[in-house]
Amino acid sequence: MLSLAEAQAAILARIQPATRSETLSLAHAHGRYAAAALHARVDNPAFDNSAMDGYTLHSRDLATHGFVLPVAGESSCGSAPQQLVPGTAMRIFTGAPLPAGADTVVMQEDVERTGEQARFPQDTQPGAQVRRRGEDFHAGELLYAPGRRLSAYDLALLSAAGVAEVSVHARPRVLVVATGDELVAPGQELRPGQIYESNRLATLLQLEALGAEAADGGTVRDDPVALHALLTGAGDFDFIITSGGASVGDHDLVKQIFAEIGEIGFWKVKIKPGKPVAFGRVGARTHFFALPGNPVSSLVTFKLFVEPALYAWHHSQQPVLELPATAANSFRRSPGRMEFLRARLWSENGEMQAETLPGQGSHQIGTLRHTNGFIRIDEDSKGFAAGERVSALPLF
Ligand code: AMP
Ligand code: MG
Image (cartoon, rainbow, N blue to C red):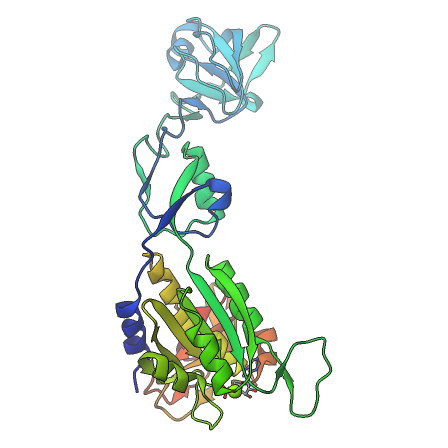
Protein backbone atom coordinates (compact mmCIF):
# COMPACT_ATOMS: atom_id res chain seq x y z
CA MET A 1 0.00 0.00 0.00
CA LEU A 2 1.28 3.47 -0.86
CA SER A 3 1.99 6.16 1.69
CA LEU A 4 0.25 9.50 1.27
CA ALA A 5 3.38 11.09 -0.18
CA GLU A 6 3.85 8.22 -2.65
CA ALA A 7 0.23 8.37 -3.76
CA GLN A 8 0.37 12.13 -4.21
CA ALA A 9 3.59 11.82 -6.18
CA ALA A 10 1.97 9.16 -8.39
CA ILE A 11 -0.89 11.56 -9.12
CA LEU A 12 1.38 14.47 -9.93
CA ALA A 13 3.47 12.27 -12.21
CA ARG A 14 0.40 11.24 -14.20
CA ILE A 15 -1.67 14.41 -14.47
CA GLN A 16 -1.76 15.83 -17.98
CA PRO A 17 -1.92 19.59 -17.39
CA ALA A 18 -4.19 21.95 -19.30
CA THR A 19 -3.10 22.60 -22.88
CA ARG A 20 -5.64 25.30 -23.66
CA SER A 21 -5.92 28.78 -22.25
CA GLU A 22 -8.40 31.59 -22.67
CA THR A 23 -8.33 35.35 -22.21
CA LEU A 24 -10.76 36.77 -19.68
CA SER A 25 -11.59 40.18 -18.29
CA LEU A 26 -10.58 40.54 -14.64
CA ALA A 27 -14.19 40.32 -13.49
CA HIS A 28 -14.40 36.80 -14.91
CA ALA A 29 -11.01 35.55 -13.76
CA HIS A 30 -11.67 35.07 -10.06
CA GLY A 31 -10.28 31.74 -8.86
CA ARG A 32 -8.71 30.99 -12.23
CA TYR A 33 -5.01 30.28 -12.77
CA ALA A 34 -2.69 32.54 -14.76
CA ALA A 35 -1.46 30.86 -17.94
CA ALA A 36 1.26 33.46 -18.51
CA ALA A 37 3.34 35.80 -16.41
CA LEU A 38 1.51 39.02 -15.51
CA HIS A 39 3.40 42.31 -15.59
CA ALA A 40 2.47 45.82 -14.44
CA ARG A 41 1.57 48.21 -17.23
CA VAL A 42 2.16 51.34 -15.14
CA ASP A 43 4.17 52.51 -12.17
CA ASN A 44 2.31 52.46 -8.88
CA PRO A 45 1.92 55.17 -7.69
CA ALA A 46 1.77 56.47 -11.24
CA PHE A 47 3.03 59.91 -10.09
CA ASP A 48 4.30 61.49 -6.88
CA ASN A 49 1.22 62.35 -4.84
CA SER A 50 0.03 63.40 -1.43
CA ALA A 51 -0.60 60.89 1.37
CA MET A 52 -2.72 63.43 3.27
CA ASP A 53 -5.18 66.26 2.98
CA GLY A 54 -3.11 69.36 3.73
CA TYR A 55 -0.59 71.70 2.13
CA THR A 56 2.35 71.09 -0.12
CA LEU A 57 5.46 73.20 -0.27
CA HIS A 58 9.18 73.01 -0.86
CA SER A 59 11.02 72.36 2.38
CA ARG A 60 13.74 74.81 1.34
CA ASP A 61 11.22 77.68 1.61
CA LEU A 62 10.57 76.98 5.29
CA ALA A 63 14.24 77.60 5.96
CA THR A 64 14.47 80.77 3.86
CA HIS A 65 11.00 82.32 4.42
CA GLY A 66 10.30 81.16 7.97
CA PHE A 67 7.42 78.88 8.86
CA VAL A 68 4.64 81.08 7.50
CA LEU A 69 3.96 80.93 3.76
CA PRO A 70 1.23 82.42 1.58
CA VAL A 71 -1.13 79.84 0.09
CA ALA A 72 -1.51 79.88 -3.70
CA GLY A 73 -3.45 77.40 -5.80
CA GLU A 74 -4.69 73.89 -5.21
CA SER A 75 -3.94 70.34 -6.30
CA SER A 76 -6.93 68.03 -6.26
CA CYS A 77 -7.40 64.47 -7.47
CA GLY A 78 -7.77 63.75 -11.15
CA SER A 79 -5.98 66.65 -12.79
CA ALA A 80 -2.48 68.03 -13.15
CA PRO A 81 -1.76 71.03 -10.90
CA GLN A 82 0.02 74.24 -11.77
CA GLN A 83 3.65 74.50 -10.82
CA LEU A 84 4.26 75.58 -7.20
CA VAL A 85 5.16 79.27 -7.04
CA PRO A 86 8.46 79.44 -5.14
CA GLY A 87 7.99 80.80 -1.63
CA THR A 88 4.33 79.68 -1.43
CA ALA A 89 2.41 76.65 -0.23
CA MET A 90 -0.40 74.98 -2.18
CA ARG A 91 -3.55 73.31 -0.86
CA ILE A 92 -3.46 69.57 -1.67
CA PHE A 93 -5.66 66.52 -1.07
CA THR A 94 -4.97 62.82 -0.55
CA GLY A 95 -3.98 61.18 -3.83
CA ALA A 96 -3.61 64.49 -5.68
CA PRO A 97 -0.41 65.01 -7.73
CA LEU A 98 2.48 66.79 -6.11
CA PRO A 99 3.00 69.98 -8.15
CA ALA A 100 6.35 70.57 -9.80
CA GLY A 101 8.54 72.49 -7.40
CA ALA A 102 7.11 70.89 -4.23
CA ASP A 103 8.79 68.15 -2.18
CA THR A 104 6.80 67.95 1.07
CA VAL A 105 3.24 67.68 2.35
CA VAL A 106 2.05 68.81 5.77
CA MET A 107 -1.24 67.40 7.03
CA GLN A 108 -3.90 70.04 7.54
CA GLU A 109 -4.33 69.20 11.24
CA ASP A 110 -0.76 70.47 11.78
CA VAL A 111 -1.24 73.73 9.87
CA GLU A 112 -2.49 77.00 11.31
CA ARG A 113 -4.34 78.76 8.53
CA THR A 114 -5.04 82.49 8.83
CA GLY A 115 -6.64 84.00 5.73
CA GLU A 116 -4.21 83.46 2.87
CA GLN A 117 -1.33 82.53 5.17
CA ALA A 118 -0.44 79.18 6.62
CA ARG A 119 1.89 78.43 9.53
CA PHE A 120 3.78 75.14 9.39
CA PRO A 121 5.34 73.19 12.26
CA GLN A 122 9.02 73.77 13.01
CA ASP A 123 9.73 70.05 12.81
CA THR A 124 8.36 69.60 9.26
CA GLN A 125 10.49 66.90 7.62
CA PRO A 126 11.56 67.40 3.99
CA GLY A 127 9.84 64.79 1.81
CA ALA A 128 7.17 63.98 4.42
CA GLN A 129 3.76 62.57 3.41
CA VAL A 130 4.71 62.12 -0.22
CA ARG A 131 3.94 58.85 -1.97
CA ARG A 132 6.68 58.38 -4.54
CA ARG A 133 6.07 57.32 -8.11
CA GLY A 134 6.83 53.58 -8.48
CA GLU A 135 7.48 52.96 -4.78
CA ASP A 136 4.95 50.09 -4.85
CA PHE A 137 5.84 48.57 -8.23
CA HIS A 138 7.19 49.67 -11.59
CA ALA A 139 5.82 49.40 -15.12
CA GLY A 140 7.07 46.13 -16.58
CA GLU A 141 7.62 44.54 -13.17
CA LEU A 142 6.59 40.89 -12.80
CA LEU A 143 3.51 40.76 -10.60
CA TYR A 144 2.49 37.09 -10.88
CA ALA A 145 4.22 34.04 -12.27
CA PRO A 146 2.22 31.56 -14.36
CA GLY A 147 0.14 29.18 -12.26
CA ARG A 148 -0.93 31.85 -9.78
CA ARG A 149 -4.49 31.29 -8.62
CA LEU A 150 -6.10 34.70 -8.90
CA SER A 151 -7.82 35.90 -5.74
CA ALA A 152 -10.02 38.97 -5.43
CA TYR A 153 -7.00 40.88 -4.10
CA ASP A 154 -4.84 39.73 -7.00
CA LEU A 155 -7.46 40.99 -9.44
CA ALA A 156 -7.66 44.33 -7.61
CA LEU A 157 -3.88 44.63 -7.78
CA LEU A 158 -3.94 43.83 -11.51
CA SER A 159 -6.60 46.54 -12.00
CA ALA A 160 -4.32 49.02 -10.23
CA ALA A 161 -1.51 47.90 -12.52
CA GLY A 162 -3.60 48.72 -15.60
CA VAL A 163 -4.07 45.09 -16.62
CA ALA A 164 -7.53 44.64 -18.14
CA GLU A 165 -7.53 40.98 -19.09
CA VAL A 166 -5.57 37.87 -18.26
CA SER A 167 -4.76 34.62 -19.97
CA VAL A 168 -5.85 31.72 -17.78
CA HIS A 169 -5.77 27.96 -18.16
CA ALA A 170 -8.95 26.33 -19.41
CA ARG A 171 -11.09 24.92 -16.63
CA PRO A 172 -11.01 21.15 -16.35
CA ARG A 173 -14.37 19.49 -16.99
CA VAL A 174 -15.11 17.20 -14.09
CA LEU A 175 -17.92 14.66 -13.87
CA VAL A 176 -19.12 13.91 -10.33
CA VAL A 177 -21.08 10.76 -9.59
CA ALA A 178 -22.33 9.21 -6.37
CA THR A 179 -22.76 5.45 -6.29
CA GLY A 180 -24.83 3.31 -3.96
CA ASP A 181 -28.18 1.52 -3.88
CA GLU A 182 -28.96 3.13 -0.53
CA LEU A 183 -28.69 6.75 -1.60
CA VAL A 184 -31.62 9.10 -1.98
CA ALA A 185 -31.81 12.86 -2.30
CA PRO A 186 -32.92 14.99 0.66
CA GLY A 187 -36.56 15.97 0.26
CA GLN A 188 -37.63 12.38 -0.36
CA GLU A 189 -38.92 10.02 2.32
CA LEU A 190 -36.33 7.50 3.49
CA ARG A 191 -37.40 3.90 3.06
CA PRO A 192 -35.82 1.20 5.23
CA GLY A 193 -32.09 0.92 4.57
CA GLN A 194 -31.86 4.17 2.67
CA ILE A 195 -29.74 7.20 3.56
CA TYR A 196 -29.50 10.72 2.26
CA GLU A 197 -26.78 11.33 -0.29
CA SER A 198 -24.36 14.09 0.69
CA ASN A 199 -20.98 13.63 -0.97
CA ARG A 200 -21.90 14.75 -4.46
CA LEU A 201 -22.98 18.22 -3.44
CA ALA A 202 -19.82 18.83 -1.40
CA THR A 203 -17.67 17.59 -4.26
CA LEU A 204 -19.45 19.69 -6.90
CA LEU A 205 -19.24 22.84 -4.80
CA GLN A 206 -15.61 22.33 -3.86
CA LEU A 207 -14.74 21.80 -7.51
CA GLU A 208 -16.47 25.03 -8.51
CA ALA A 209 -14.66 26.85 -5.72
CA LEU A 210 -11.36 25.51 -7.06
CA GLY A 211 -12.03 26.83 -10.54
CA ALA A 212 -13.18 23.60 -12.20
CA GLU A 213 -16.26 23.12 -14.34
CA ALA A 214 -18.18 20.50 -12.42
CA ALA A 215 -20.95 18.45 -14.01
CA ASP A 216 -23.47 16.64 -11.87
CA GLY A 217 -23.63 13.02 -12.99
CA GLY A 218 -26.27 12.16 -10.41
CA THR A 219 -26.45 8.97 -8.39
CA VAL A 220 -25.84 5.58 -9.98
CA ARG A 221 -26.87 2.27 -8.49
CA ASP A 222 -24.40 -0.49 -7.59
CA ASP A 223 -25.13 -2.10 -10.90
CA PRO A 224 -22.28 -3.13 -13.18
CA VAL A 225 -24.13 -2.32 -16.38
CA ALA A 226 -25.16 1.16 -15.25
CA LEU A 227 -21.69 1.93 -13.87
CA HIS A 228 -20.00 0.60 -16.98
CA ALA A 229 -22.18 2.74 -19.24
CA LEU A 230 -21.56 5.82 -17.16
CA LEU A 231 -17.81 5.45 -16.93
CA THR A 232 -17.22 4.51 -20.58
CA GLY A 233 -19.40 7.44 -21.68
CA ALA A 234 -17.34 10.02 -19.81
CA GLY A 235 -14.50 10.39 -22.31
CA ASP A 236 -15.21 14.09 -22.86
CA PHE A 237 -14.33 14.88 -19.29
CA ASP A 238 -10.87 15.67 -17.98
CA PHE A 239 -11.67 14.08 -14.63
CA ILE A 240 -14.27 11.71 -13.24
CA ILE A 241 -14.82 11.67 -9.51
CA THR A 242 -16.99 8.98 -8.01
CA SER A 243 -17.86 8.42 -4.40
CA GLY A 244 -18.56 5.00 -2.93
CA GLY A 245 -17.96 1.51 -4.20
CA ALA A 246 -14.18 1.76 -4.02
CA SER A 247 -13.71 -0.71 -1.17
CA VAL A 248 -13.64 -4.50 -0.98
CA GLY A 249 -17.36 -5.32 -0.54
CA ASP A 250 -19.29 -7.46 -3.04
CA HIS A 251 -21.15 -4.37 -4.20
CA ASP A 252 -18.06 -2.18 -4.44
CA LEU A 253 -17.93 -2.24 -8.21
CA VAL A 254 -16.53 1.15 -9.07
CA LYS A 255 -12.89 0.28 -8.71
CA GLN A 256 -13.41 -3.04 -10.51
CA ILE A 257 -15.05 -1.38 -13.49
CA PHE A 258 -12.41 1.31 -13.63
CA ALA A 259 -9.83 -1.48 -13.66
CA GLU A 260 -11.63 -3.19 -16.55
CA ILE A 261 -12.05 -0.17 -18.76
CA GLY A 262 -9.06 1.89 -17.71
CA GLU A 263 -5.75 1.76 -15.98
CA ILE A 264 -5.48 1.90 -12.19
CA GLY A 265 -2.57 4.03 -10.99
CA PHE A 266 -3.06 3.04 -7.39
CA TRP A 267 -5.72 1.68 -5.10
CA LYS A 268 -5.61 2.09 -1.32
CA VAL A 269 -3.39 4.49 0.55
CA LYS A 270 -2.05 4.24 4.09
CA ILE A 271 -4.27 7.00 5.46
CA LYS A 272 -7.16 7.22 7.88
CA PRO A 273 -9.84 8.06 6.97
CA GLY A 274 -9.81 7.39 3.23
CA LYS A 275 -7.84 4.18 2.74
CA PRO A 276 -9.99 2.75 -0.09
CA VAL A 277 -9.25 5.42 -2.67
CA ALA A 278 -8.33 4.71 -6.28
CA PHE A 279 -6.74 6.87 -8.95
CA GLY A 280 -6.08 6.15 -12.59
CA ARG A 281 -7.13 6.88 -16.13
CA VAL A 282 -9.89 5.88 -18.50
CA GLY A 283 -9.81 6.47 -22.22
CA ALA A 284 -7.09 8.59 -23.71
CA ARG A 285 -7.09 11.43 -21.24
CA THR A 286 -9.67 11.18 -18.47
CA HIS A 287 -8.22 10.99 -14.99
CA PHE A 288 -10.40 9.27 -12.46
CA PHE A 289 -10.64 9.36 -8.72
CA ALA A 290 -12.75 6.74 -7.01
CA LEU A 291 -13.25 8.28 -3.57
CA PRO A 292 -14.63 6.29 -0.65
CA GLY A 293 -18.29 6.72 0.21
CA ASN A 294 -18.04 7.59 3.87
CA PRO A 295 -18.66 11.34 3.96
CA VAL A 296 -15.58 12.25 5.96
CA SER A 297 -13.36 9.95 3.89
CA SER A 298 -14.74 11.61 0.80
CA LEU A 299 -13.90 15.07 2.15
CA VAL A 300 -10.40 14.10 3.28
CA THR A 301 -9.48 12.26 0.08
CA PHE A 302 -10.77 15.16 -2.00
CA LYS A 303 -8.41 17.47 -0.14
CA LEU A 304 -5.44 15.11 -0.20
CA PHE A 305 -5.71 13.85 -3.78
CA VAL A 306 -8.17 15.78 -5.95
CA GLU A 307 -7.07 19.26 -4.89
CA PRO A 308 -3.39 18.77 -5.73
CA ALA A 309 -4.44 17.19 -9.03
CA LEU A 310 -6.54 20.23 -9.91
CA TYR A 311 -3.68 22.55 -9.11
CA ALA A 312 -1.36 20.41 -11.23
CA TRP A 313 -3.86 20.58 -14.09
CA HIS A 314 -3.49 24.38 -13.85
CA HIS A 315 0.33 24.17 -13.85
CA SER A 316 0.20 25.19 -10.22
CA GLN A 317 0.76 23.81 -6.74
CA GLN A 318 -1.74 23.25 -3.98
CA PRO A 319 -0.97 25.54 -1.06
CA VAL A 320 -0.78 23.47 2.10
CA LEU A 321 -0.76 25.21 5.44
CA GLU A 322 0.45 22.97 8.25
CA LEU A 323 1.28 24.63 11.54
CA PRO A 324 2.55 23.48 14.91
CA ALA A 325 -0.10 23.46 17.63
CA THR A 326 -0.37 22.35 21.23
CA ALA A 327 -2.67 19.37 21.80
CA ALA A 328 -5.50 20.31 24.17
CA ASN A 329 -6.34 16.65 24.86
CA SER A 330 -4.68 13.30 24.41
CA PHE A 331 -5.26 10.78 21.64
CA ARG A 332 -4.09 7.16 21.61
CA ARG A 333 -4.11 4.84 18.61
CA SER A 334 -2.28 1.98 16.97
CA PRO A 335 0.29 3.07 14.39
CA GLY A 336 0.25 2.11 10.71
CA ARG A 337 -1.53 4.80 8.78
CA MET A 338 -1.19 8.55 8.56
CA GLU A 339 -4.28 9.90 10.27
CA PHE A 340 -6.29 13.08 9.94
CA LEU A 341 -8.30 13.85 13.07
CA ARG A 342 -11.09 16.35 12.97
CA ALA A 343 -10.17 19.06 15.39
CA ARG A 344 -11.11 22.40 16.77
CA LEU A 345 -8.28 24.90 16.42
CA TRP A 346 -7.98 28.21 18.21
CA SER A 347 -5.28 30.55 19.35
CA GLU A 348 -4.46 31.36 22.93
CA ASN A 349 -1.75 33.84 23.93
CA GLY A 350 -0.44 33.72 20.38
CA GLU A 351 -0.16 29.89 20.30
CA MET A 352 -2.35 27.54 18.31
CA GLN A 353 -4.28 25.00 20.36
CA ALA A 354 -5.81 21.90 18.82
CA GLU A 355 -8.51 19.79 20.39
CA THR A 356 -9.36 16.36 18.99
CA LEU A 357 -13.12 16.16 18.67
CA PRO A 358 -15.19 13.21 19.85
CA GLY A 359 -16.81 11.27 16.99
CA GLN A 360 -13.92 10.40 14.64
CA GLY A 361 -15.78 7.66 12.71
CA SER A 362 -15.52 8.31 8.98
CA HIS A 363 -19.32 8.17 8.74
CA GLN A 364 -19.68 10.91 11.37
CA ILE A 365 -20.29 13.98 9.26
CA GLY A 366 -21.97 15.56 12.31
CA THR A 367 -18.53 16.15 13.85
CA LEU A 368 -17.86 18.63 11.05
CA ARG A 369 -20.11 21.12 12.85
CA HIS A 370 -17.29 21.70 15.33
CA THR A 371 -14.38 21.10 12.97
CA ASN A 372 -12.22 23.92 11.67
CA GLY A 373 -9.11 21.89 10.97
CA PHE A 374 -7.29 18.60 11.21
CA ILE A 375 -4.55 17.22 13.41
CA ARG A 376 -2.21 15.13 11.26
CA ILE A 377 -0.59 12.11 12.85
CA ASP A 378 2.37 10.37 11.23
CA GLU A 379 2.14 6.71 10.20
CA ASP A 380 4.31 5.40 13.02
CA SER A 381 2.87 7.57 15.79
CA LYS A 382 0.92 6.10 18.70
CA GLY A 383 -0.85 9.38 19.27
CA PHE A 384 -0.10 12.21 21.63
CA ALA A 385 -0.62 13.46 25.15
CA ALA A 386 -2.24 16.75 26.11
CA GLY A 387 0.32 19.53 25.92
CA GLU A 388 2.40 17.83 23.21
CA ARG A 389 3.28 19.47 19.91
CA VAL A 390 1.08 18.31 17.02
CA SER A 391 0.74 19.27 13.34
CA ALA A 392 -2.45 21.16 12.58
CA LEU A 393 -4.04 21.89 9.21
CA PRO A 394 -6.55 24.72 9.37
CA LEU A 395 -9.60 24.35 7.13
CA PHE A 396 -10.98 27.52 5.62
P1 AMP B 1 -18.93 2.59 0.17
O1 AMP B 1 -17.67 3.38 -0.06
O2 AMP B 1 -19.80 2.55 -1.03
O3 AMP B 1 -18.61 1.25 0.72
O4 AMP B 1 -19.74 3.36 1.26
C1 AMP B 1 -19.22 3.53 2.57
C2 AMP B 1 -20.26 4.20 3.43
O5 AMP B 1 -20.54 5.50 2.96
C3 AMP B 1 -21.58 3.51 3.47
O6 AMP B 1 -22.10 3.61 4.77
C4 AMP B 1 -22.44 4.29 2.50
O7 AMP B 1 -23.80 4.21 2.77
C5 AMP B 1 -21.91 5.68 2.69
N1 AMP B 1 -22.04 6.49 1.47
C6 AMP B 1 -21.65 6.10 0.24
N2 AMP B 1 -21.86 7.06 -0.65
C7 AMP B 1 -22.40 8.10 0.03
C8 AMP B 1 -22.84 9.39 -0.35
N3 AMP B 1 -22.75 9.81 -1.62
N4 AMP B 1 -23.36 10.20 0.59
C9 AMP B 1 -23.42 9.78 1.88
N5 AMP B 1 -23.01 8.59 2.30
C10 AMP B 1 -22.52 7.73 1.39
MG1 MG C 1 -21.52 1.74 -1.67
